[in-house]
Image (cartoon, rainbow, N blue to C red; front, side, top):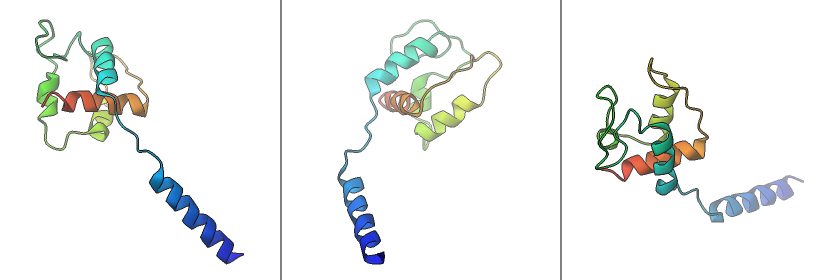
Length: 103
């Protein structure tokens, strides 16, 4: 029985390693950012209107160790003028990938 469990576990590990990894979609992230963030943040190069109270996405991209986890943490801390944004983990990863593309 123990040998069968070890074999099953080994097989599961092989399948897990061989499965494709999750890849973030920067284009989808840009769409999300334009919908939720562009009224306050400078989301893309050449954007003309935004508030001076919100950091531009290019600034966030240059922040040391910026990644999807850091973005998720930032989104969990509501700001007085920031709307409540409820995004799925994949959407946060997509938006982080878009932001990093602005480096």
